Image 1 (cartoon, one colour):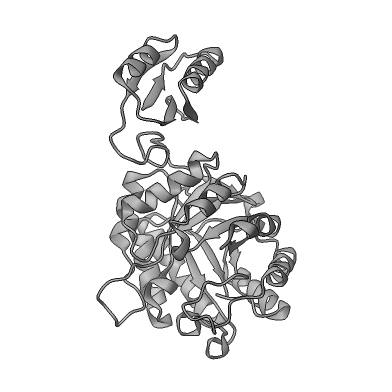
Image 2: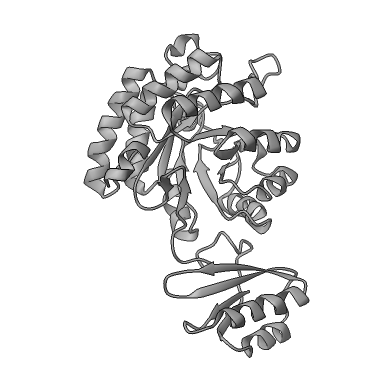
Length: 348
């Protein structure tokens, strides 16, 4: 249920409601918006008597039952868009944030040179995989902590925040030590133990939609993270598995537009994994911005034909720079400009 407080409710009255919920074995999550303060009660099924009791407490305006299975990630709990600040980069404030870099970190020079190139072109966040889930056990599966160190070096060299994937509960603490955003990949969208663990980390998490995940399942996966206290969740549409074989996946841009209405969380689009073809990355990036994506995740490699993973969907430095100039034009046309880069923020 949602407990909507009166606009003049005192801090003491708000804390009173939170205490009452705790007594009833319910966890209260506070959302203080510009127009109203809402407390989401999460836990067991709330009976009508409990709703009535809370509704009579001082400072309470009304109590609203929630019919949707996802509580904290829905618009009912938080009507205002969630904006997540990562090292000065604001995700979800109406501008478009671009995360770019190689699929896999191959060595330090490769990571740093790619990071410098994407920064020069206008990227806001550096991506790079140190732990890689691969369909074949014989494919390159990443450098592990060595790769994380290279990613940290790229952050030091560029001043941009970094994002990388965490695959195992055992690696959460290590990845959180190096990365500014913890990415949960499509194959782990419903790895509930991992979601719980990431929910205990006080760093933003980006949750990719599963290959066959429905929108409701995707939002419920986000709910696992948020229910543990981490409300800084970014959703990422990266394509779903359909009958079509001409592309690697089917990039569901309708999901981007729909989830922006259903949830207050930022939504990122990944046209690299969504198509698997570098020639389609630019048109699908433009389409993603047009339907309201808060950002893009783009794979970039200095020599895609020599990449250890996902070369077919990676842009060269030249093609990435071209994409960024195109996005400036498209973003301006649809009212979703590229976000300021960290170095430009002081002048804004």
